Length: 293
Image (tube, rainbow, N blue to C red):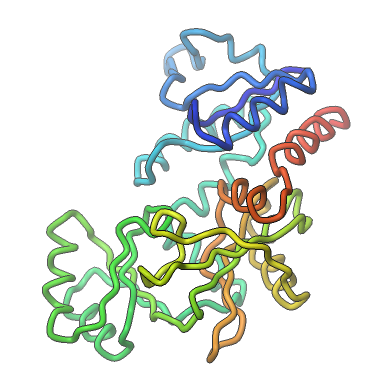
């Protein structure tokens, strides 16, 4: 069996998946998405170093070092590979529903998943009006991870200027979300094949309004209530991914809420907080799926 890993060489979770597959005699070659070419006339994919037809499947761990709208174009090519019969964990056609923060939010709200009050517009005037009525609010880019590019808006005298700066820097759609009280803690609940396998908490160090490890947050043990597990399970269900992490929190005023569902997160948080090796579990899962196909 030969399962490849589409990810980033040297990245912790990519290398972990690679090692586990190799140890199980199931491949483990790492390919970066930028290395795959496509000949439209011949309708063939190629790689400089590997014959893609030699792979039985791919674990799709990471598509690039940063999130942007170009990921949707790259997913188009992976979806074409998928339609040609290549097996993926998770399927590109399903991941494409969640790359954009807006697309993910719409699908969650259509399935009655509780989220913070959210407003989307292209007009500075409308964005400023809503923000002033819901202070404090967070302005979020449509494509980002670990809170990159997010901005807290809490001064009504500065909001219009901040929105205009965002627009001048290339932002076209304002995605605004009312800030909720979290006591500096939120959680990641991880699912494999739709089944809950574990959770972790992110605890902020007080230096920032968010809890990301990029800004001083730390992973901690999490023992979620059944209510929180059930909510996260409902949130991930519409996306149908093989592996996914749901970002949830317990708020003072709204009860449990969901922020987003991620196609790629959860590996390191689970390992550092609970000693659960998601790479080991996912590679076993992929091998079983291929053996029973």
